[in-house]
Image (cartoon, rainbow, N blue to C red; front, side, top):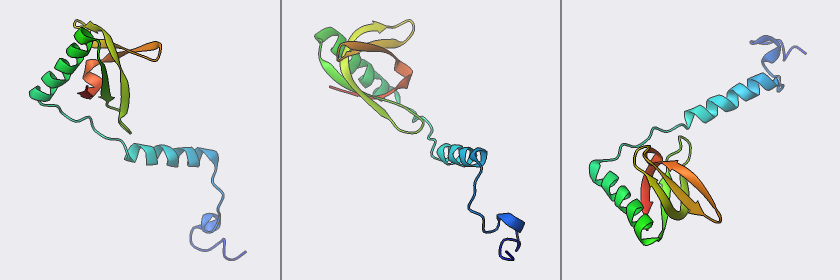
Length: 110
């Protein structure tokens, strides 16, 4: 019993963690791994746009990489709509589609 009352009182050797503290610790650990979005130069932006336009015109499948603060997401599909006003594309894959904002795309490949 005297072990528990040394230094930090009863929490010194206690292994009990209340759920709120556990959740806060997990949130903090996740925030530490957060990344900043990379800045793309003009040439890379034009190359991405060219790949998107070629996919739309030629009906070829492409792979795009979307930025996520924790882990990048890759999607493979066919560009079926390009909305230049809203700067987004409609990517079709496996009998469904997603609207994707061009600002979220960090890479595109044929």
